[in-house]
Image 1 (tube, rainbow, N blue to C red):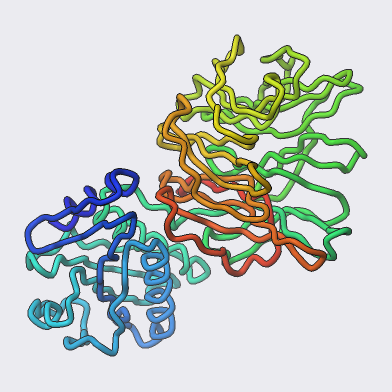
Image 2: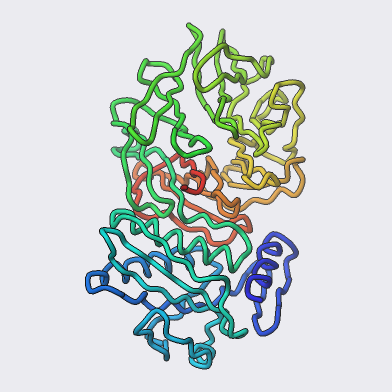
Length: 439
């Protein structure tokens, strides 16, 4: 029942201004876009071996941060719990959890076995008095304990909402240091929540717009190490990077992988004209996709690889267009006031996120792929460069504050415009790109 009700919630989040999802005793109300989060209880996982106490506590806290951070769940403090779990397989006293208005209960155990961390957990619907799905057990090295926590949270999120999760994923971005007029930039990658930062390049040259491959193993980005923008591809496993082939006398930038990972689409400036091109990831002859006197850049494939959305000023102002992945005449899809740029196709295929500039403000917005139902999710001095979570529920972007002391930071917002928040732990940063779910 819990899964059915919250699956309805997920569908209603971008629907009417007032709606209600109800199934049996579980009740979720959505009023004027405000959703009452689902109250859940998460007792600290039981340490099943003597050396697992701290690990059990840490894993529990990461799971709670993942779930509560969505804005769809609200944790009931452990101090309010009536039943206490001394063992993973203790029977659940449903009246004790009903008494504190918990609607979901997560019970888990952690042990150290053979040099690995082993986590097992169960999820219960309190008002139906039933376990939701089978219990699961996961294991990994101690260094990967956070991934175990994210994987547990993904399973719980999926069972409750009916959608895939997004917690066990990473974000590649440009880490920034130094004053606003002399920024030093280097590529970095971190967990989706800003933990476990790893630097991929040094700050000896400007780097821009990193983009993950569909398998998460490679990153395309723009570098100025030769003095002009060039595309470079980096292997995230060994941090080795190589410049992609170029036509002499040109500048290449804004690359993005195709959904199958076999080719890239990018912008190339040649003789003062900027068009879209494509080539194989291992090189080969580039193929031209557009041919106009306009500036055409920021291409992004549809999930099935059949179409490309991009920005162009061919109409006289910066607008969004869609064309076949093989080229051809594009169709304009943005017609609102202001300028549109940096379009990115949702993993679900139904929406396109974009940056909009209008009346001195910047916005992150979404629209249908035909340009209809445009909605602006944010507004500030400078919001730009959206990237989608693997399940298409959340958008991460760069927000820059004004003034000499201002700086860029990473923020996220869900597609209803709710739950706007800063990504902690990464410091000054820009140009985020979300990975797929990790294997």
